Image (cartoon, rainbow, N blue to C red; front, side, top):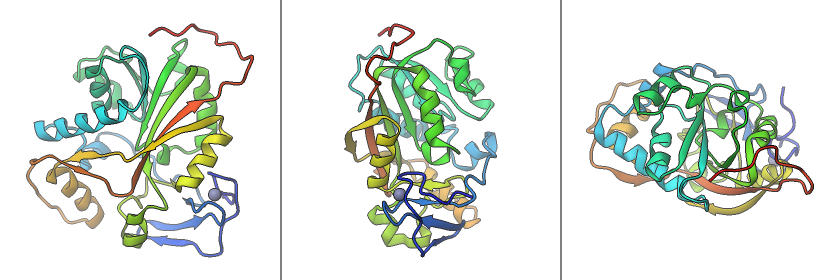
Length: 280
Ligand SMILES: [Zn+2]
């Protein structure tokens, strides 16, 4: 059981938050929300992607996804040809967006199919790995977590391991739902980010404390726009309601429902040697 707030290590308040997918603890200090039992979902794979309309068979859906990811990657102040790693790269459209910007893309995903999907998008085999250790000597000046951190079972330990694969002063671009967003307060238990696969929701304050504890400085926050089509929105609504809904895959329009974006800068401990020079 996870008793302390995973964001700030504060205590839980006496009042849990009730959602459609179970009860969440609320941190008395920072307002982050988490499930006591930790992650309860691990079925990531092709059905997970297709149920959410993420495969992008429709050109407009694909274009919308790439447009969103391009906007996220552009938040990194790095040379265009930099190596970049996307954590939770899923169906590969974030990799495509980074490639369009000139970046040298790599991905990590728990889904075994992600590497094959990346190959379908024109990337060489091995572009997507399932474990950080498979990145071997690669060092990244930029890493993206787009709707990924709230799925990771032990985010603090994960970031610690990730540091072995970061270039000095690497930047992390993180997009995730915000526990203290206006939409969360307005929608209550109907907030769409209350899902079985999301076990942790950071508040803005909780995220900043968490990043600092993990050795990262908050460089800036931003308001991430996700470009979506009615098709994508209705796929998610169908998933929530259990009712099959159909919708057209156009037009594309910008959308944000409680998501926040953060750019973090790694505070590499002074005197630490980087074992691999950075290229690009
Ligand atoms: Zn907290």
